[in-house]
Length: 428
Image 1: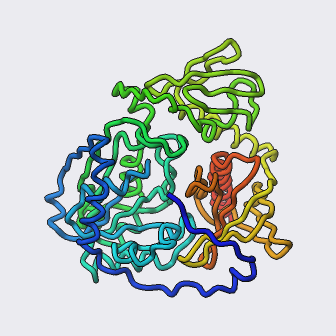
Image 2: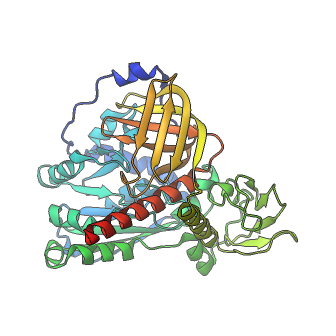
């Protein structure tokens, strides 16, 4: 899948008119039927099946549907499971580029990923009450990098109490294993299934605290796709299963060097120390030579260690990067505007983006979001780091930095800053 791009100057893009906010449309049953038909080949290929629990408690009324976000197949699963229920999808603005009219006809609600969006809750409420339609939301916002849930935004329970509608969960199994984000858009032969459950009624939401509601959601969005694969004995025999694995395992667990890892075929190798690992058909890593110490066999454990290393760098004050980037901007639904080149830096003080022959100098606060929009091979352009505000979004395609590490760092900096702020408030 690709996105329309146009080359324009920074000042020219900043002068473009911004889209006028429009209320969401009622989802088209005709169009959702078409989406279902077009989704059949991939769902059939994965032998997709699903189960339902407690949906009689919804009683046919509009509801909030929360779904984990593991793969590009997620939306096809949702349309298959929910049909013919009318529902709108909370979708990122980039998905509207070049096809805004189709997305609106589907009832989709545009939002800014990891950016404060004042219209979102109003639009969701409008869809539920005025259009008598359900709303599907991926609360993680970003795709899973390592097969586990992405951090949820804080106090989702506040949203549940505000909407006052039943909450339904959809959780998938096999979706990540079928098409993990790191594996360069290569699909593997894995059976995919899903479970839909009425999680909470309006009455149950009213009687529970925000903290209790958040705990329920945290439990639902707790999963480990690599552990599931191993425990279920799901064998992935494709000879490209380790392609791109360096995107999440960017730091060698043997020599500690970064940027020297390469996942290719069924192997993960460090060019710096020569340590090599073989990824077996159950998704586990095994030493392939004497240089590999075999510290981690479970990929999420390696990823957790990388997070610990980032946390240590931040504690020591040694974390930072300053790299060249190609810069894209999004200010409307017509295109991604490529505005030139520049530099992106990151530290405990947040991001700073400069460039476009001196015209651009933008700072992004470390407290702006609990996570970072960091994606692999985004729209087949390249690995990307994205941030911005309600007026504009910047898409930075960096050289010489791992975007997964940038996400880990952004999340850890946010936690540290929030903790300091809370401690200061208590002290004060």
